[in-house]
Length: 61
Image (cartoon, rainbow, N blue to C red):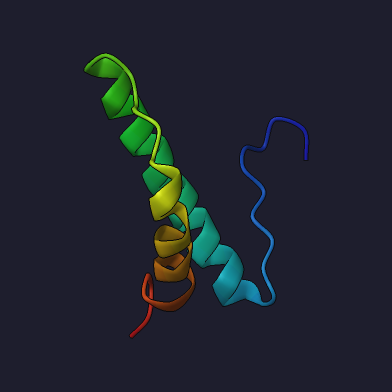
């Protein structure tokens, strides 16, 4: 998909859309952070927590 943008696969369409929405949110956050000197890296100790939150909390009803 030349010049299409982010490609977000998932186990089903709902998972793919969830990943796309998350990707758009991250892109927005990075763009805003760049206006204030650039994004700061996340601490390695918090990566597992953030992954768990994405898998089990974000987008859940």
